[in-house]
Length: 451
Image 1 (tube, helix red, strand yellow):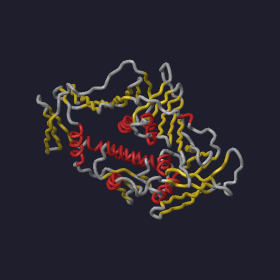
Image 2: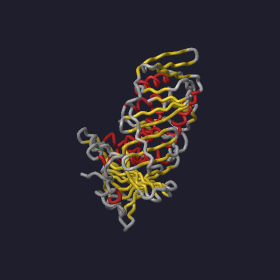
Image 3: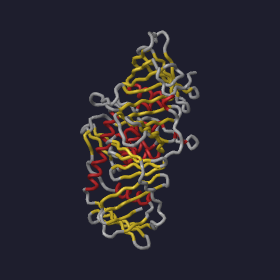
Image 4: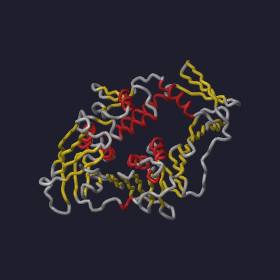
């Protein structure tokens, strides 16, 4: 829905589960309102923008070639073909317009470890993924600055019969496109409520925290209580938790406070969380909620969403507190070994076996159906806190789903990662070696049976 009031254009879109409202400044000539087919208009605007010739829109980039895994979707291949690295000039550039949707998809692929820094020209960075994401964000800003300063304009007109005409103006060249909209009389609008609980969350926290746990959400119509992120609001902490029954991600914002009379908790659907991640540009947010609805406001965007009417699992009872065996291993080396192991693992179970000794870990994966197997040895530190155990004489053997491990490691931002175990059949806990200030992140991963 488009609603023009003087020089402000208000827009609303909905799928009846989620409502998104935003507004932008425009050059308005006559007030009015109309509903326009969203996807058709978006496809048109995107195709017009990507026709623009971009010259040297690039950034300094002191890392080596951007690489990728060998076994992910074709979408990654598309991005890899567009991202170019000039080793002589040491710059990274994107060969066509890098829009917000492409930038967000790139960031998701980077978070998942599907696009990563394969090697470095200089000393390896401990936060190469963050560096790459920051670089993508800088490229995006340069493309936006180029577009807004290039004299390109869209002019949208609607008549009394709901016919919409879109004019694309660039210098002396003008293109014209027409489509039909509808009256706004039956357009669904979000329910505005006055009596809502609320709390404020600082810049970067909302998007960062949701990004840290969303991979553990399981979209399941039957087990709806796991189909979203659990917001656990306490007097001095804000917790985001997600689980699919095989793993659990939890991140805590410490020194958090709110003015509500009681603590509260609710489940936010995954789709809503994804929208927040896509649209929030590390801005502070106001979160308002009751028993059925959540309203999240940041920048010039407001998102309304229904909450999941179900009870989240009692996550605190499943987190082990007596894991006494501590493994410390290089995150980058472990990630790279697991990526190679995935090539040789069973395509269904994706199982990797870890034979852990005091100062080394053997990683093994095999697929008997095709006669494939791989084995690597990594340096590590493995100790027992409760008693002296000689793991060189009797190694600790455990197995995991490789994809779960890779998802977990993608969220660790320190050069080393700490895993704690009790027995090979009990849940393991993964943490960074050092937490950020006022933050506490952990991931629980259930092992798979070793045959």
